[in-house]
Image 1: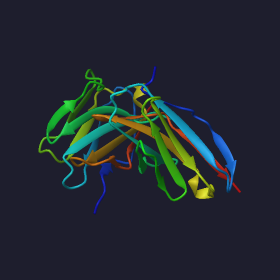
Image 2: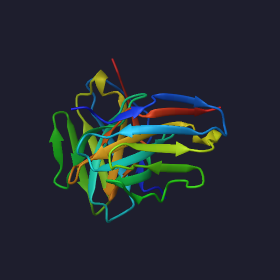
Image 3: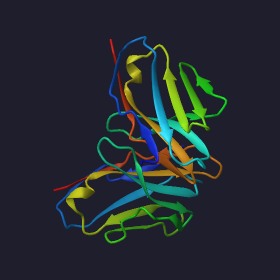
Length: 107
Length: 113
């Protein structure tokens, strides 16, 4: 079993849609959690950290459920510029990346 | 502030040839990482340095891969000899103590033919 598992997608949604990505992790001792965004042929960039209490940054909401070892990312009012691959990342001394979920937002 | 700088951006070599990648982390970032990313996959850790010490190299294929960070700043990753399966993007990242998240360089795209 992979340490971090994500639905690879692709998710194809119209502009304005709400889309949710899920991620599960296997190491219950993991300490911190993140979502990274990666555009085609670019490096991953930190999108947001994920906290147990849930956190929001504009149209983006991240949630962590430690009991279920589950992380989610919700994007509201999708924009064309949100098209990218979203990587779930779990940190236990080192950052372990999921394979990513590809999102395409269409006009 | 300059980001993590990697070179070269692209490299095409024949199999069995050696290749080296260079990384200059963000100033003041003590921790440096080398990751490999295959197409359609997330980055996979190869090695982590704390200053000049390699503290986690368990995923580094030591028969052909080597890395160094002699003065605790710049780092090089070498493959000798390269194999077809080594074709991937090699990403360097750095972080400072207590930081949440890493900063990645733009990567080196290696193609072995």
